[in-house]
Amino acid sequence: MITRLFRSFKQDDESRRIYSWALYDWANSAYATVVIAAFFPIFFKQYWAADLSAAESTYQLGIANALSSLVMMVFAPLLGAIADRGSARKKFLIFFAAMGIVMSGGLFFIEQGEWFLAMVIYLFATIGFMGGNLFYDSLLPQVAAEKKFDRVSALGYGLGYFGGGLLFAAMVAMSLWPAAFGLADASEAVRVSFICVALWWGLFSIPLWLFVKEPAAAQNESIVKLIAGGWQQLCETLREIRQLKVVMLFLLAYWFYIDGVDTIVRMAIDYGLAIGFDSSSLMVALLITQFVGFPAAILFGRLGQRFGAKAGILIAIGIYMGITVWASMIEKEVEFYGLAVMIGLVQGGIQSLSRSLYARLIPPDRAAEFFGFYNMLGKFAAVAGPLMMGWVAVATDSHRLAVLSLLLLFCVGALLLWFVDETTARQR
Image: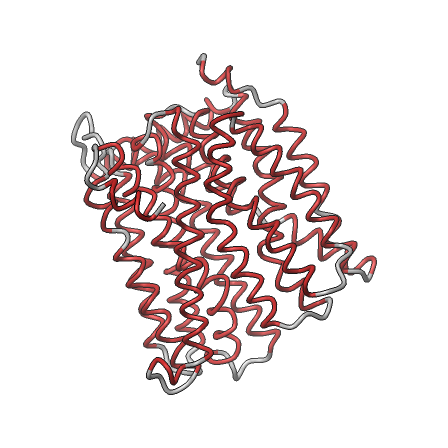
């Protein structure tokens, strides 16, 4: 795969464009894995906010995560509409990526106890990460023909899992054995990891900036006209999307099942700790998920190309149902590793096929705007699931019944997806 990637830059323009686009997933997944999922929450609580109570530091971190999601949730559709009108998807991507890269590197310079500054820098870095993803997704119809959507989308997720996991493994080693890397202690190692993420993100974003082209806008408009036109187009789309029943049905199905997926991602470590597993074992499980996710996402892309993206998503939802039932019964850490393997097998696949199926359902000339709605629902995801798990845990005093409650989200999502008719969208 890696050899083919480098060969692609000597081949035709389409291959160069596809691999350059997919490499951005390799680039920014380092932030998702190393910063969001692993080091920042732990370092925030134990280093920057060590003077706060555990409950207060958790509350402040929750505010930062909620605000970043809220900002993108509110502005994503409008920014997408503006980008479509001005053929500025790539420009918006570069802006948000640059923000994320600079802010991620900026975490290195924050001293112990400066929890508020750390929270603000993290907030802007995460907005950069999520904003970049919106415009990255919307470029899919520009880089590949429709028949290749499944494999190209899966390639991006596969490279993301592999690249993010590769850097995460190196950063874990650096934090465990800092002296071997010429560092004073684990705290310095974690701070250096933020610089490494920024460098990784910036370096592997370069091919997209160089080789992915976007058609020029039909006419040049001032910023004021672009914003006004974008707002008008957004209002029209809100009216129109009610008529695009297949798009609405997919988005509703997506909200349910991706809420289940994201809840498992975000609550897995907390669930493992709640039933008595060691934190180091849970980190190993996270690494397993990353590296299994790489080939599995590629495989799901081929599965979607052969049998259809919808069929692939339904298969993944069925596996997630099995994961949920198994998770409610596990007793040993080795079983948690088994769950990590199973999640890795389907997590990238369900994400990549959802993206490629949605790209088929929407008007390609308004991809950024429609992906704004898609990403907006993604920000709403992992809201109902954690709340439901929390309510069930309190009501029944059982974390196992709480995780089992996620079956409801997967069942409803699968049922709604079953009625999504791709052929109707193609005949528009």
